[in-house]
Image (cartoon, rainbow, N blue to C red; front, side, top):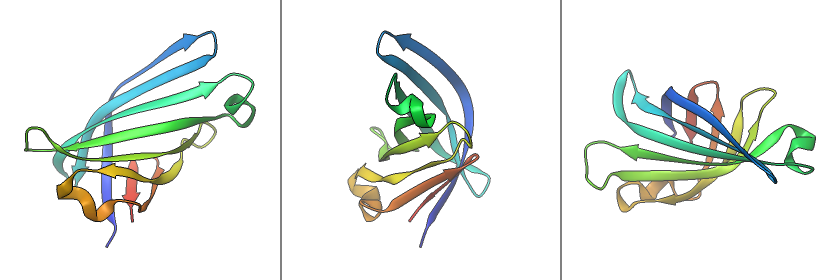
Length: 115
């Protein structure tokens, strides 16, 4: 069964360097209108490479409440700046989220689907 989460962004910033641009995003994660955690995203644009397709390399980690340290899922893939959509797969997950390892993920708008 797919995991469907809603992201609510609280932060977005860019940091340019000679080779490209880092973009950072973070906020809260909801499932069925109940907050279940937080998320952090890094995107990397490499000048003369990913900028040709207006895309970026993407890593997002979702940190689930209430455990300390939190159970988590990390996805990696690509971000399309034209649509804002993202695709990839789960690259890592803590033991409590191990069922999701290797599954596909998509992000359309603020909705993340894993599975």
